Image (cartoon, rainbow, N blue to C red; front, side, top):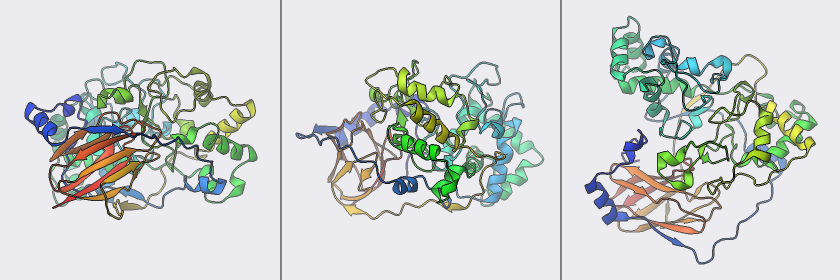
Length: 453
């Protein structure tokens, strides 16, 4: 991949200078068209039970980025930093103060408090299975775990410690210089980047423990009761839960407006995109029995209250997610079965991250020479294309969801705005190279583009 600029360091990351704006307008202002015959919305039949179960299978290994591969020394250093109050202004607040392993790497509060004692704006999210995450924070303002690390440390409402002050503390400590040298032998300096890489490495090892759900998925029919099997069918069928809570981590890593009655703009404020107003990241349901209260605002105290919200309390707005079932009504039997199933997603023993096998993530998808790509069911198709310089890429939204085509690169910034179902966006790349195209609303949708002479 070509060099890419980090993004979402606050709203300023989206402010282009006059010269840059002029360049974008002259090279590739977003062009869109609406297909004359919009594809009919297809109501796909629910696949068979075994096929459904396979989509939730636990991965064999935990992915680490090539820019920050796993090492035990790095993990151990990250763990030490994660539990160290040195990272806060008063020396008492650590990352683990809010992300407590005994409470599902959350804190059981509606809203946490920082070193000042003031309540934070949002509920503390759990940290399970972030190795598979895309952008992090409820609003996705950090593109990666490495980018996320500095934000709570520096925030006046959280740990309130300037990074340079933290680095000075670590350099003067009797143990940390040696630990950094072991973790980063090629460059043992204690820097903002090495602190971020160490903590991010530890956070990627926070993999949820094996549960009865995992055993059932793996083929142990006795792991589930008949009621729990029925609950899984409600979860993946009439309840529509798996529209967003999908895959091993039980999250699509995307952003949805689920109709909570508050004024928080969520992803909309980050993207400056009206279609993403009130949208927040889908939380994982792993270890959900330990992480109450629920939602980005901590407003729902129990799983039963969560189910009731989707049945009776959704606030009708134009921005409601296309994946959110409308007028959901469950029978008492179906509701009880669903809640019984949700209980299987939490481990039954001591809460302890699962043992991991680390691997360096690779993108190994065949390249296709084409100028047309479609968006289908939260995925680009194909996912890896080659263009000749001067050719334009046409992205056709064949999905039932609103998408947002974006490129953030040293050579090219592009934002298509809201791309509605049936619309086509045209992208003209200004130079040869490798570019990553993604959807700002569903960031796990990634398209790799090679532009050749």
